[in-house]
Image 1: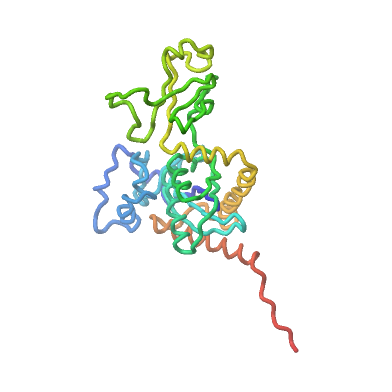
Image 2 (image 1 turned 90 degrees about the vertical axis):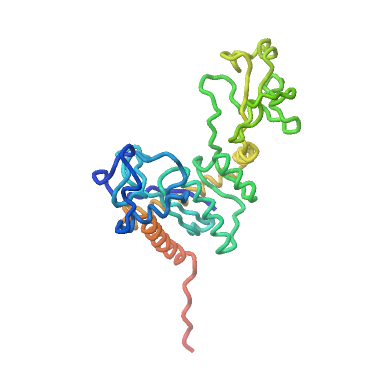
Length: 319
């Protein structure tokens, strides 16, 4: 299966909105509030609309507060929802749809909801999931690997360096000894003796730091290529680094190149949605309104697709 998201403009505008410094949820909580506002209040604790991120949007719409103010298209900002598709790559059939706010955390979180729903409804469990780098976070990859789903997803990694020095990818992981090995063959360890220092060990986010000995780095001939501005080199390891390595190993296979071509089937469905079906702006407001429009549009796309896949019934011949 493959997954992706696309922005659809909401039925809201900036003139009828409030900046985040002046926004107060309690001011709109009333019995006679519009339906879209009541739905917004009901979904504040859901990851798809309110709980995915604590960051407040720059502006909040009065008519549709669940929509997200975004400038993701690198043009004029607007209010929008994200239309998330999970498709079968063999035929390009949409197997599930989810409406979310237009932020990466909500879009990635919808993956789990759709995969669980598809398994419960249809008994479908994909061997691999194809997506772009936005879905290549450690927790997402760890969730997939734990469920025996091969992540054909580029790893979302910020450990690369732009100054020409060695990045984390240049250090070899030695799982048996719980250490990294630098290109010069020296070990970077998390613990070398029993310390009572609370800063030692993994952080609350599961991130662990591995350090080399200061004396070793000072005498190393490659220090200028490794840590020219530090006494010793340190490398961090994320909680789901094993799953990230699984994705990196898959990226080196021939099947991954095929998967990247198959991912275009999702993009083609979104292009068809906007150019042929004309869904560039929503007509309904609120989370339920967005979800209903996305579901109806996906149904129309599937009917067109199935009409081409399934053979037409043959009429019986007259005797």
